[in-house]
Length: 79
Image (tube, rainbow, N blue to C red; front, side, top):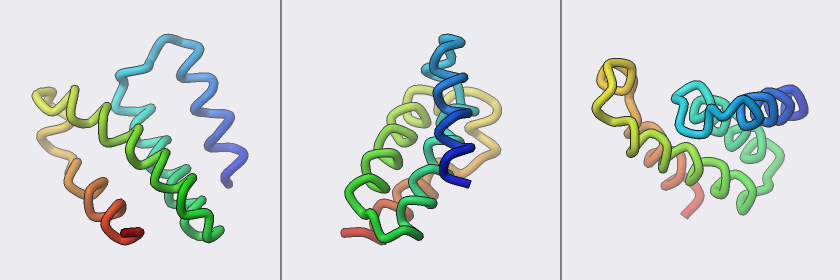
């Protein structure tokens, strides 16, 4: 699954979707995969990337219905 998420992230990055919530969701999924592989530093790196996008997009309708706080919860699991 990790490889597919990474491919999806590259496609989204190349499409200039750097601030898209879809890319943030993909980064979150990559972080979760790394966590399951016990690669904590990589997991945190991707969760931090997702967090920054969620914070920049926090006023959008999607972000209001989603729960960006979940990113903080995922990061706390590694500290």
